[in-house]
Image (cartoon, rainbow, N blue to C red; front, side):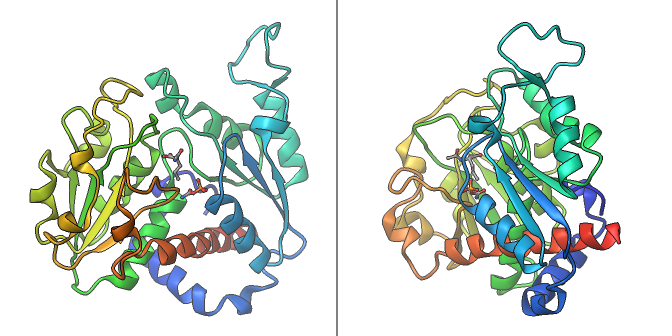
Length: 316
Ligand code: AN0
Ligand code: CP
């Protein structure tokens, strides 16, 4: 594996999930794999899980870790090629990425969608610039449109908790007071579409994902109908793709409750976190035995580990 930008960097989905679960048991065996190598974790936005789990995964391989909150501590970066830089930005991403690449053997970057200009967000300029200029492998820690380390952790978790060979997995939109990116649901849809699951998206009208992510996916605007027979309920809020970046529903009837969970086939409840309690989903669901949000978060170490192992192995 060279970069880990999206699912396209994974040749065999079942293979990477099996390898990840195996690696979880045998991590001690690889404690020297990254010895003498440095990973730089570059954050344009806040993070708890991604920051700590990727750091922990790197430490498990004996790597050195540098973390920079470039969004708050770095120079403001210019993204446009050929720009006359007489505005706010003090440094071009071209130079910043090349310098970071000179200090690090692997660079991992978080850069959220701005939710102002759809074409700009979907062009993935920041991650693509890092891949173009850094000269070292780049890992996506949630870009404008994708969060593949989360989706891989989710797939590993589903594999560990499923009771039937081909479980029904429902991604349901849920309300939220702020406009959030589509990266988590886009990625989740992409990974589930390629996994051995029956996948359904439930969302209010106007919350359909971009066509490339909806293609071939069962869609319903009726949440109750989607929940019937479900083995996994994956809740997430996202803002509209059509009315780009806007909140087009605040309907609290979409909040995941114990009553809704009762419609399922004793489904497990999942959320990538952070979660707004009693808005997205009730306390009762989050704290129930069927909630697997903590093992899911724990598997963020698992997904980072298998990705790092593949990149480190390819560098040898
Ligand atoms: C972010 C999002 O929805 O993309 C990060 C989720 C992992 N969530 C928030 O900003 C609350
Ligand atoms: N799930 C996730 O990526 O969490 P953080 O935003 O806290 O990293």
